[in-house]
Every structure is written in structure tokens, then in C-alpha cells.
Image (cartoon, rainbow, N blue to C red; front, side):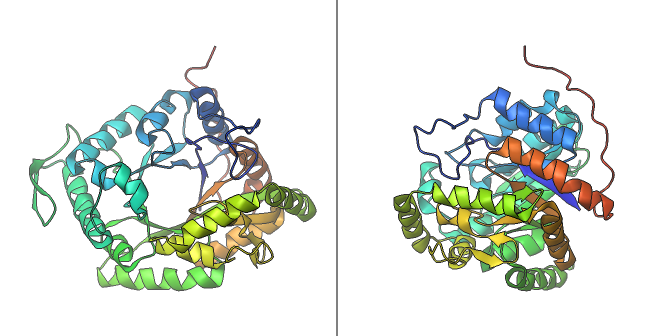
Length: 368
């Protein structure tokens, strides 16, 4: 298995949805992002996911600034294919691989919410965006091949696309989406298909369906899952943290978020919202799986909550369903990375689910 953490390039806090005057708000400046990245590097996380959108710093620039401060952790850089040409994206990724000594992973985010897409001047309908994404990935891979690549499709026509040198290794492509259009793209083009943290019985049918779709394309997929986590030495301590997060959620913020979710065009978001329906009394949706974060937060809204052993058990359960890649986050991300990295990951290593922790050494540069 591979364990990844989240890099909060939109800022961090002790609450799920901090207000503008929150005294615990942590801006996503370089010193703070560096603290999280170097912690994850030392704790043995495989990679770090960065978000994309106008609510956060640019993923390419933010993660590139952390390359010289880390040794081994990879950066799962999220970007929207409609905002770059595929050859430019291939060039950026190829350069990143050389500058980072092969530590780039690529997360393609087609996007579903019209308001966010409109900020970037993207007005195409959903099916068109996913068709464009498929062509984008084909050209990007072609440009990485080391030979001039020609392509003529419905959305792109390129001649002799290439980069100065092929990236080494070729970045793995991660991609998520619960709609039929998204699933078609994943089955044909990507390496790792990502799901949000749905209960095991709910997500198992998606894994089976995606395996069948990929097999029809004579391909296979790896699977990843995105979850928050609250892990503590005892279950009582972990649930006390979850209860405290819930107690600080503004009822007006919950109501506003539920109105947004009711009108979403994202199938994945609708599936997340269906777990609780905005009801604070329906938040434990599976053993150790808590949907409280989804009361106010878009995207993944579930967290694994429990003792170190319980959280390790749930991870093993998802692994048995076919998930080999796990992307976690917490509030705040720096402290939760240590709770998880020092509490849960050693148990997974003892069970043979993770390799031994590698020594890292100090960063190349440091802040003065």
C-alpha cells in the first residue's frame, strides 16, 4: 500500500470550516507548508496531494518550492486539463521530474461545479469536458514518449508533440469521478482511479464496475481512496475530537452547505451528501467512518475515527476491497500527520502492509 497526506495550500486550522477571524487560522505560506512536507517526508508518507482551484495556491508552484526542502516524498499535483495545452502540461511534468529526481505524480481534475469553472473561462458541458480530458491525456502521454507525436481529435490537433527529454519515470496519472463520463475516461486512460471515502459496501460496487470497464479496454487499474482521519491511542480520545469538531460547526454554515450540495452537478458530491442528508444524528455511516466533515465541507466528507488499531483495521478492510493508495488529511494537517504517522503507520508496517520506514536525513536547505 501507499500512504499519502494532503498539503493544505488553501490554509489550515483546527476547525473544518474556520471563519475569517478564526484565531487558529494558518495561512498556506512557505514556512508552514514546509513544516507539513518535511514532517511527511520524515514520517514515511509516499506522497502529498495538492488541491486546485481559486481557493488555494497554485499546485505546481507551491509543490515545486518544496522540492529542495524534502528528500523522498512525492507530490501529487492536481490541475485542470482545460487550462493548459496537453503538450505544455507534458513539458511541465517532464521538467518537474528532472528537478525533483522523479517525485511527481499527476492528478487530473476535470471539475464539475460551473461556478468554479466559470472563473477560468470554462463553459463547456460536462460530457464535452470529459471527452477533452481523454484526448488531453492521450496527447500528454504521447509527448512523453520520446518520439514526435501527432494527434487529430475532436478537441485537439497537435503535430510532433514532444518534450526536451522524456520524464523518468513517467508520472503516474491519478483521476477521480463518479459519473459515467468520468468512468469512461478512467477506464481508458489513467493509472490510479480515485474514490472519495464511501462506506465499504457502497464503494465495492464501484471497484467491481471499474475493473470490468478497464478490462473491456484491455487495461487494468489501481485504486485509491481519499479520506480524512482522526486517530488517537484510544477510541474515546478520537471520538472526543470528532465531537468537538462537530460542536464548533455553525448551524447556518451546515444549512448553506446542504443547499449547495442539493444543486451540485458532481455525482461524487451527491453521493457524499446522501450519506447524512444534513442530519447531525446520521453521521456514523459505517464502523469508524464518520460523515461529520461533510456537513460543511465539499469534496470528501468522511473521516476514519478511532484508535490506532481500529483505523488500521479499516484501512486493511479497504485494502481487501482493492484499494492500494490512501490519501488522508486532518485538522490541523501538521498535528494529524504526526498522530497518524506515528500511531497508525507503525501498525500497518507490523502487519506487513507497508514497507519499513526509511531514514530520510535533513533537508537540503532550511529557513533561517
